[in-house]
Structures are given as C-alpha cells and as structure tokens.
Length: 174
Image (cartoon, rainbow, N blue to C red):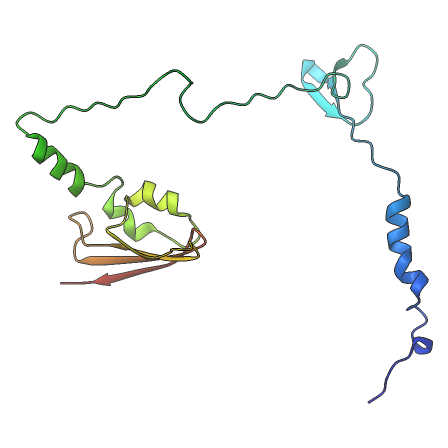
C-alpha cells in the first residue's frame, strides 16, 4: 500500500488549513439594515439601500418594530367555567356514559392517518386512543383504537417515535 506524505500533497499545509478560519475572523460584520420605502401606487417596498428622498416610510434601525406577547391562558383574575346541560331525558349517569363512548374526533378518519403527523393531530382527527403502551420516556409509544361503529371490524394500531407517527397498522377482526 502506498502511503502519502505531506510532500506528495502540497495543498496540505498548516497555512492552508488555517486560512479559512483567519478569513472568517477578519471578515467585517454584514450590515442588515432594512428600509421601508414607498413604491409604485403607494405600496411598501422593503430594501437594503436607503430610500430616495420623499419615499421613506420606515428605517428599522432608528424605529424598530414593537413586539406583542399574548398569554396562552386566561387573563389573571378571571376564571373559565364550562357548563353543559344533558340532553332531555338523559340522567347524569347516562350523560357520563354517552360522553365516554363518543370520543372526540371521527373514527371513520382512522383510515386516512399517514406517517409524519404528530400525536396532537391524531387526537384531533380521530380522538384519544382506547389503549396506550410504552412511552414512559416518550421515545416509542403505541396507541390502539378498537373497532367503532364508524370503523367496524378494524383494529388500528399507531406507532409513534418522539411524538411523530411512524407506522399505521390496520387489522380486520371479527
């Protein structure tokens, strides 16, 4: 086997290895000034060069945009109460049973699930699973959906990795 030496590789020299690093250090910082100018018919135009006289709308260096942050929950000092009235003729026990039997989502949409979507989207589309397994560390998890009136005789098993659906298995059961 032929071993290459530094003499046979003139391009491999410490100065050639250090040159890209030195160029990055010596490069001046790029200017990122954005100007908002009035274009044709008064439409705003964003550019990196100063606007012509009389066409200036905004200089983002001198007048930066404001940032609004909205809270995710209810405003402090308020409360949210959800009330529901049972259907006529349904007792409170019957309402609880009906709520348990009809999960959110549509069981008929189980056949349209495809790998790549996340857990939240699955729950939104077809509802919460009937059974879960694995997933104590959330790396790998399996969800099972039992046959339902909208998806009869079909057992649907979903496999998730890191919250992403990676496999959909549908079995006919009778």
